[in-house]
Length: 328
Image 1 (cartoon, helix red, strand yellow):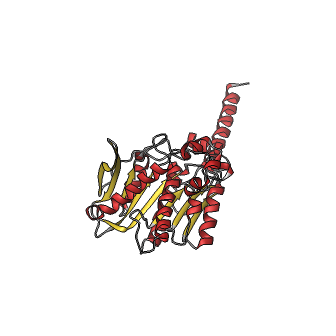
Image 2 (cartoon, one colour):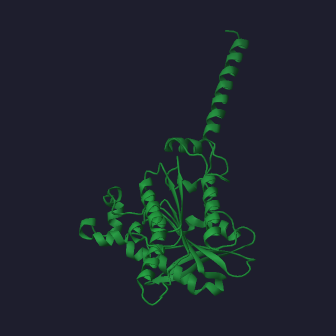
Image 3 (cartoon, rainbow, N blue to C red):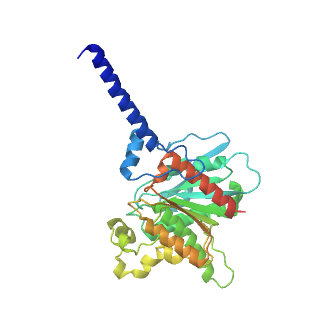
């Protein structure tokens, strides 16, 4: 073969490869996440390929403080023995009047994760006129369900008690969480509402919230797909058979009542960690009970989907829209 023919063949092969790569990249590209929900994937393998080919990026977990935002790091809201539990707070520097507060509860199977994981949310929402905090809580094995719920409730109580100095409207406090943090957020909101419903004198629970945002959190720990998982059994501290009521009280599904706070649910249909059924049954229970809710059931998206840029932008946009409707 002459050099000219060889060069032509190489160019054809390279051109074909370039076209194939461009086609694959376009197939895996998911835009910037504004407007409608980003198109999902056929499998988790496609998601990994999209990230490897940079057709989709992960969010920056350590964003800088935006202009017009005041940052307060390591604010103590509770003390456990000699150890403080801390929150990081981002606030708008030019807010007028009392603004809503968002309290973010990180995930990590109740045993890992850190409050800084939600800095990507708190810095953003401070630019949108919210006071946004992200909190510590006692992780397993130090903290089981009762201790973790108590820590998250303490954060709500602290924000309410310090609402004046924070510039917060104490009647517009919202809890937001993903995965284990979604579960704890639902527990915070529904437990307080349940306690108020049982009160006979118009008593108001200091841990009440105006709304809950749940990103792919488990809702029924008693379900077959959850009650035999080792991390769930460890977290609960006792088998389901020996403490069924304890398991029900730790399952947001069974705490839903007519006065439960408005709830926004995000759930990926191909989530292999918290199955879509967990959110489906919660949405159905909220509907039957007459609780205001919105459900983003997202085809082709997995667990921790909001770690990607397009889905994170979409989730932030939908959270803001939802809160605009329910916090009037």
